[in-house]
Amino acid sequence: MNLDGAPVLDDAVLDELRDATGGDEEFIVDLVETYATEGAANLDGILAAAAAGDPASIVRPAHTLKSSSASLGAMRLSAIARTIEEAGRAGVSDGLAADAELARSTWVETLEAFVAAGLRR
Image 1 (cartoon, one colour):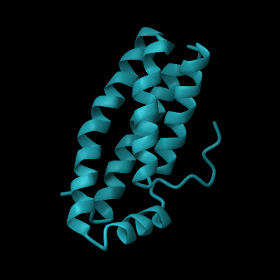
Image 2 (image 1 turned 90 degrees about the vertical axis):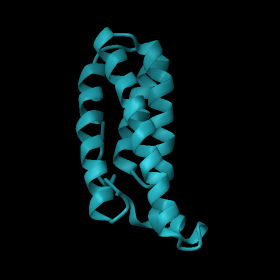
Image 3 (image 1 turned 60 degrees about the vertical axis):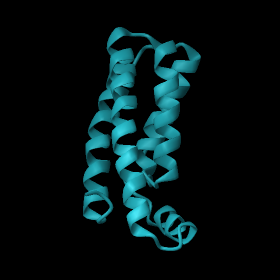
Image 4 (image 1 turned 120 degrees about the horizontal axis):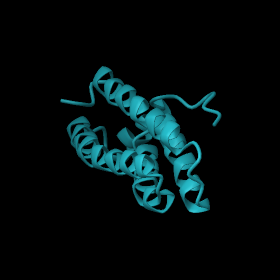
């Protein structure tokens, strides 16, 4: 998996989100808080499916995490989740545990980046 150039948070996406919301930072903070809650559940699903070696069960949480991450500018996590989703769709279990662990560590980085950007309570 090549993550070169995939920022933890993409400022351009965040700027587009600010434009789309009329600069309503509180609304964006609410979106990020919802993402943090729902994303944690999706990450748990990814980790459980990877631990069980069950690629079919990893598809839905990986797809959801991929999409929600991209919509908030968490491009590195989105790229990792996309790789996990593609492996799940292909029925490939080799490497899922390592990719799931990478998603977990990147999740922590992503949440820290949202805090640093002032977008988490």
